[in-house]
Image (cartoon, rainbow, N blue to C red; front, side):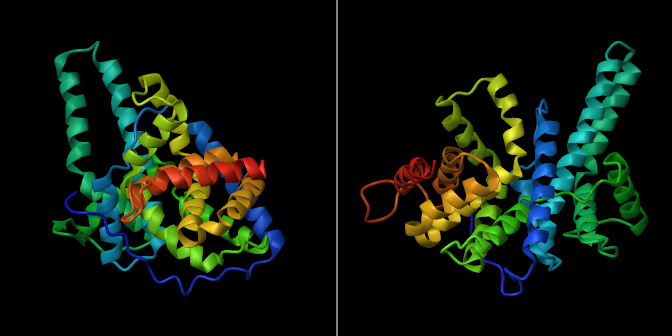
Length: 317
């Protein structure tokens, strides 16, 4: 992707905090936590990810062109991720069986793989439409498809995912935690944090691999992780609750670093995630958003940020 990333703040004036009953919030947070725990368990053993920068950017731009809500773009990425992983797994399973057979069957496997590549844009568009419940956008960014092709594509995705497309997203976790923070007396207003969280969440999606690679290196204290360490780390990439607390903590530092330790303490209390883990994730996000250095300051901001987070961790533990 050419040129620097320029995340845009979206209009958040319509989003309201503090209007839902406490009991409802508690039940919703528990449900999200259970869904997240199950997703983390299911991710164990998976060896691939398709949240690449170009793919995510395509989904974001398409959603913006169609004037869709921000939550739609995140859910479309998650639907596409699960669909492509499922398809790739099926192709690999067929390949394992067909390698013992004749060349014709191997060629059939290659044809299936090529078909997946050739229909990737169509599948991406279908994922956006399924996420937004649209039905009539059948020409997207110069890729023309008939209405029948689009409907067939949506049906293929639905069948592959067993019609389970109402997936939780990191945004849902962020907004739920912001709601709870508001009730807990967080000094930084939830609406103020919300806007910054959206910008940082966009950034994490667009720079998914670099951010998680830096987090992996930090967690093992080694610049060259082994393949086994990388495979075990897949479940961390699917932990949306961890991502949400990292996003909120980084947003809090950007908005008001003096209140950072309080936010860290609240997030640890709400989720049970260790302050050090929140610190590491926030450090990775700040490194890729604020940058390595700030003009006029002798010390890299992220290193100072990490120390501040770890100080908060020791204070609140």
